[in-house]
Picture (cartoon, rainbow, N blue to C red):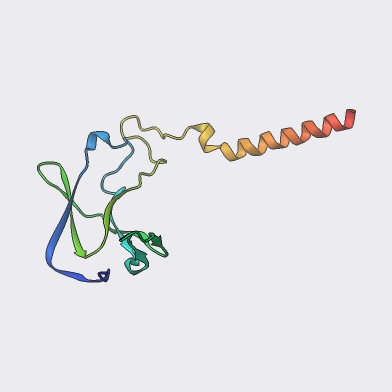
Length: 134
């Protein structure tokens, strides 16, 4: 297995085609997209010759957020070492929408914990009142 710290001597690039029309409106392309790489590649055993796949401590790490967009719409990331790569998209749902300047999460969503506590307290109070009059 290749060591995940092997440095690439010549500049190498990896390109991904992402259709911007299919992306969520709240996605900020500079902050919410990064090139992810599997960390601890030695602990990842790939499935071969009928053996089971095991993943012990392999996790994804954001390698870089720097990229260029080519004329044909590909996102071009520079890679510095060998490894298993993927584009990680992690939009922040609490950011306001660029078009309407509103948040996706409304009042109920923002106050759901307080609403749950209030409903549970009313339920307990209701049970106590019913028990007292029976």
